[in-house]
Length: 230
Image 1 (cartoon, rainbow, N blue to C red):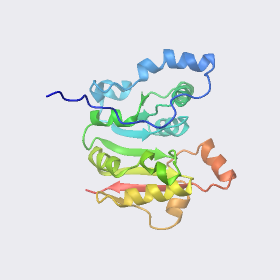
Image 2: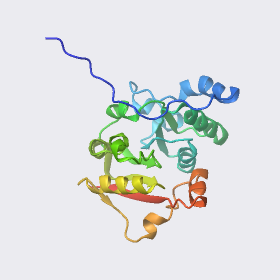
Image 3: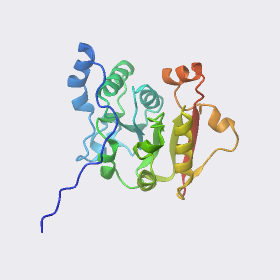
Image 4: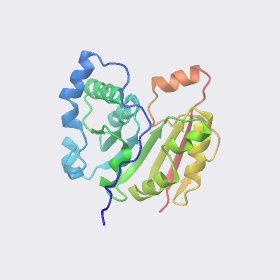
């Protein structure tokens, strides 16, 4: 009996935007090969200076232009970060931030994050960030939203007890979806105790130009921090 080959999950987002300038193209060709996360290699061999110590490992899913991820990595040099983003323009932007800040603790997965999650160790992540994901606001597109019950099951397996899942959005539909989906999972609990806990940006999270533009356009961002139960 013939068996079918496993298929990759269907991807709905953009992979390319406007043509890149020559300098950004050079970053992709010259920097990305050395910084690309290799799912076939041990984690301890991929993070340069941090490879010899038991550093925490964090993941940002959909890092956009990379400003938030680069800020996190620069502020937390003892933590190793994997950034997943299939949008080539965003990858080039992150490379520019890495170059400007001389950041050494980021590795990049420039494809659908669902393809690399099986290569990560169980309870191996201290934090996962999903910041301002594509809201897919139409009801018929709800299945395209990144945070699904199935994704929550995977994150519960990968995030260690006491680790955090950090979510943020400025879209009303996405806010409700993110909050409801995360709260429905029995392995996570919402850490908020008062409105300021989700209405104000946590001080340890970098401010970005996108957040500022959202506030100027009267789109109020919200931040939801969940902790993995022991």
